[in-house]
Length: 529
Image 1 (cartoon, rainbow, N blue to C red):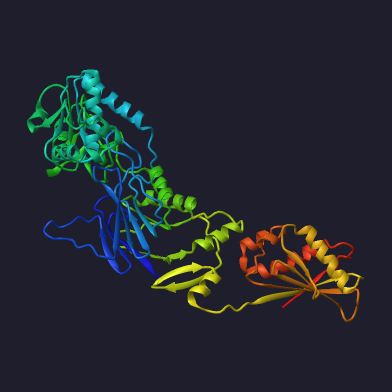
Image 2 (image 1 turned 90 degrees about the horizontal axis):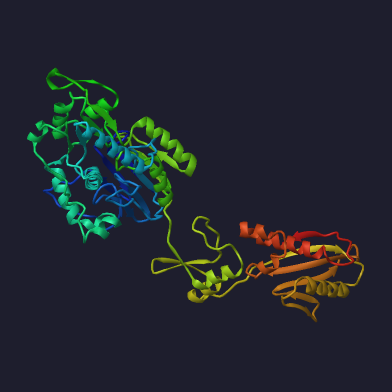
C-alpha cells in the first residue's frame, strides 16, 4: 500500500527549531527548514504546491503539497483569529492524507481579544501615570506591529505625551515591508490606506540604546520576545530593579529563557558570570501571540477535513491532551512524533473516474439520495479505459463505444399460491390485480398465456401433485427498470443500501404484491434459479 512518512528533525514535542521531513510519492520534502541563499532550489515537476493565507505574520502561508493522489498540508505558524493588521488563516476543504499542525497553545483557549486589549492599555497607562517605564519584548514580525497600532491609536485618542520607541534593526525593516505589502494586511487597513498608512507611526519613534537611561516614563518595544538575548534583555537588566517599571510578556516563552523564569514567579535570576539580578519590576503576561489556540486548531481541522493529524511545535504533555480531543471529536488518527521519530501513514489513493452525464441523469431519475461528498454512494455502470483515462458509463453506451454485442442474463423465481380456478382464470385475475395496484405502468396480457409488467414475464401453471396449487414463473433481466415498482414495497430501502441484493428483493416484492391477490388462501413460497 502507498504510504507517507513524516519525521520531525526539529519541533517534535518541542517548541522552536522547526524542521519537518516528509516522504511522499517517492519524493523527500523538507519543510520549514529555511533555504541557503547561495543555492537555487529546483521544484520537482510532479509536485503541486498551493499556498494558503496563514495570518500569523505578514506573508505567512500554509502549504498544501500533492504528489499524484497523495497530499499533505503543513501549517507552519498560523492564527485563526483576525487582529488589527492581519486577517484570519483559512484553507479549502482539501481533505489531505495528513494535516501537520503546530500546537504551541494545545491546551489554551484565549479569552476575548477586546478584553485583553483593554487590560493591556490599562496596565501601560497606569505604569506611565506613576512615572514608570514599560518594556514589551516582541519578535520583529507580527506582535510588534499589532501592539504598535494599538498603542498608536490609544496615544492619539488620549493625547498622551510619554514617548514610545521600537528597537531599530529587524522591527524597523519589518515595518518597511508592512508598508510595502499593505495589500496583504486585513480589510480595515487596506480601506484606510489611501487616507493614512497605519504603519507610518506618529507617536512611535526608533529607539537608541542611550534612551534606556533617560528619566521619566516611556514604552519600549524590543526584540527578542523571550528575553533570552539581545536588546530586550539589556533593557530588562537596567529596569528590573525599579518597582515602578513593568515588563509585559505578550507571547509564548520557551522553558529556560528569562521570560519563562519571570513568568513563573522567579525573582532572583542568575545571569552570565554568576551575577544575580533582583527582579522588582511588575511582571505581566498578556497573550497577544499570533499562534492558533486549541479552539483554532480544531477549527482548522473542520475546514480541511484531513484523514490523519500530526502535531508538531508543542510541549509533549499538552500535545497528548489535544491528541485525545482530536481523536475523540473527529474519529481520525492523531500522531505526535518526537524529534528523529518517523510516523508512517498508509494512504488509499483515489483513482479519478469520469462519469457520463446520461448515467448521472438516470441515477437521479430513479429517486435516490442527492449526491453528497461526505456520503459516498454506489453507482452501477460499466468502467471503460480509453486513452489512459477511466470513465463510468451505462452498459448500453459501453457496448456502443466498444462495438460489442449484448448478452442478456435473466433471473427467475417461482411463487406458489393456492387458487381453485383454472390456469387461464388465475392468470387473468393476476393481470386484473396487478393493473389495480401498479397504476401507471405498462401491463399486458398476451394471447400466449403470459402477463408482462414492463419487461417482467409472468406465467401460471398448475402443480402436478395438486391442481389447486398454482406455480407462478417470474422472469426478468438484471437491467430491468424495477426501482419504480419496488418503491411501493417496504423492501425498497434495502435495494438502496445494497443494490447487489436486487434480485432477492424483487422476489420478495412479488410475494408481497401477490399476497394481496383476492380469494387466495395467502400461502406463498419462493424458489429461485
